[in-house]
Each structure stands twice: as structure tokens, then as C-alpha cells.
Amino acid sequence: MADKMIDFYFWTTPNGYKSRIMLEECGLPYRIHPIDIGKGDQFKPDFLAISPNNKIPAIVDPDGPGGKPISVFESGAILQYLGRKTGVAYPQDERGRVEVDQWLFWQMGGLGPMAGQAHHFRLFSKEKIPYAIERYTTEVTRLYGVFERALEGRDFIAGAYSIADIASYPWMMRWERQGQVLSAFPNVSAWMERVGARPAVKRGMSEALK
Image (cartoon, rainbow, N blue to C red):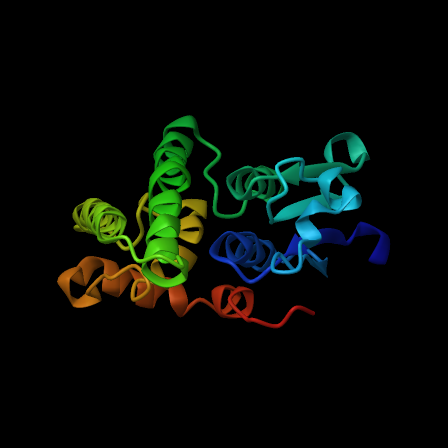
């Protein structure tokens, strides 16, 4: 089994947790290679050969298509790849897949980047820039509102539980950092409880690096 283990290049960020949750949901064996982004591990040549954009996460699957190894970077691409490989949390029919993909890309192109900027300007920027704080906090509020409305009458964002839920959950778990009031979004709050109660999600959100 060891030779079939997926090598998982990980750090404790929302994007890292997304892929870890998916690995847990799929039940695939994996070994974690910590990439300490605070120390610059992401710029080391061995990692850049796998993830040329010097970002975590990344995986190397020794049992890729045709039985040959494959490396995958970008968290959304990893979720799609693992979903296709296992059939877990990713529909097989085109209509279902389109429904999931549009919310996956909503997270990749909207929620993640905007929430990331909110984190930066609210918490980490050495200079407090009111315009930037207001801009990104307000945009995250708008995105939460989009998600809130889409969840009306649904347990999960694309209907059935999917990689679209996995993609958004670790970001929305940091709602306080983003200046959000979760009680203003009751559908989102209930969704977070449903997703967070899943055993694989609990394992995937663990801060343990091994």
C-alpha cells in the first residue's frame, strides 16, 4: 500500500485544508509533506518542480491515469482530479458536474481571493488602510449573501454534498477574520454545521501535520 500513497504537500491554510478534506472523504492513503510557507519552503526547487506557482497544496499520485504518476497543483484542480479518480463528491453526469463546477470556480475566483485579501488587510498588513479593509470586508459580505441565497431550500450548495462544499468550508470557517457576522447568514450557519459534522471533514481540518 505504501507505494500507492499519495504525496500531499500541505500547510495549514484554507486551500491546504480543502485538499486534505477531500483526501479523507475519498479514503485514499496519503503522506503529508509539510511546506512551511513562513520559512519559504514553497520556493525550494523540489517543490517548484511540482507546484510551479510556489503555492500549496499539491499532490503527487503514483497511481495516476494509465497507472503512471501524476502531479497536480491548484486546490480546485486537485479536488476535481480526486473526484474523477474516485467518483466521490463529484457527479458523473454533465448537468450535475456543471452545477458543482460553477460553485467551485465561484470559490476559487471570488470567495478565496477576496477573503484572503480581507485576512491580509484586517489582520496582517503593517499599515492599516481603511479603504482596503472596507473594500474587501464588504465584498466578502456580498459573497456570503450570494451563498446564503443559493442555499435556500438546499442542504448543500450544489444539491448533494460535493467538492463545491469542500472548497468553501475552510474559508468560511474563518468568518471572524473576514469581519463577518455569521448570525446574519442563517443558511450559511446551518450549512457549516452540516459540513463540519462530517467525520472526514473533522479529520481533514485537524491541524496535525502527520
